Length: 128
Image (cartoon, rainbow, N blue to C red; front, side, top):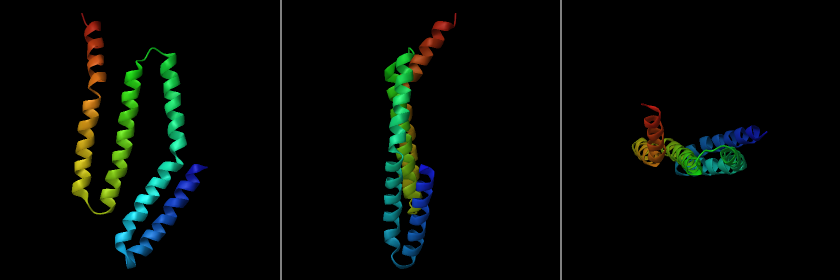
């Protein structure tokens, strides 16, 4: 029932933000950031459960643990950057949000190079 907690927190924060924008609009972004952090903490145990499941599956199979760690790091980077982009867009800073998106894409591509090169090596071994 975490979804009820998350939506309740989000709706309460939305009401507070709407009220604050009338009197102190500069504080509305702080409520938005705090709400996002609170929601992340609420779902943190789900993240750890997913990570443990992926690690146990990779240990049972012959998948390189380095690749699993890279994929988990890429997922974490994507989630954090999406949070930052949303905060920037909420505060009206779309230019900064687009720079975060570009930077994230470059980082993800650079981190995925070992996986891409390994896949290319496998493909070259299969081809005659």
